Length: 174
Image 1 (cartoon, rainbow, N blue to C red):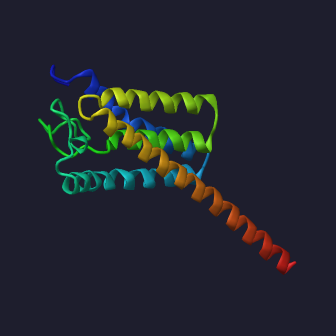
Image 2 (cartoon, helix red, strand yellow; image 1 turned 120 degrees about the vertical axis):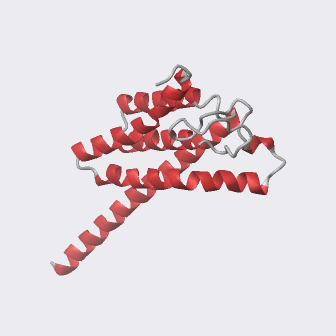
């Protein structure tokens, strides 16, 4: 770490904390829902750059979709140099932080998962202060929460549907 590395750049590496905790908990509890959420989070991370570019391409005069003048070293590995004016809506770091925080709480609702989730999102919001406007960070958080809710809803209803089908088949066969 060189002397030009800021606290915010160091804190933005906490983006890896959510997936690591979710994966370890999923493996420890053999919870396939959590393990599968790692794939969903990865896909979410892959779709974010094209989504940012789409907003800038379709709304070129709107500065809300571009990074602020202070944006530098905003890539996933805190590199990339000056990125002022580049696509920044929504914040991918905030999207993933909110997604994993919400997944953890939705599948294991307790004070520990809530505290971990809120802390992770708050740290990420602070860490991405120079790379994104408040609107971009809020939009990223909202996107992560929405995807987590959709995933949670889908997984829970899929489980109920398969359980219903298994019970129905059992009744028919017996």
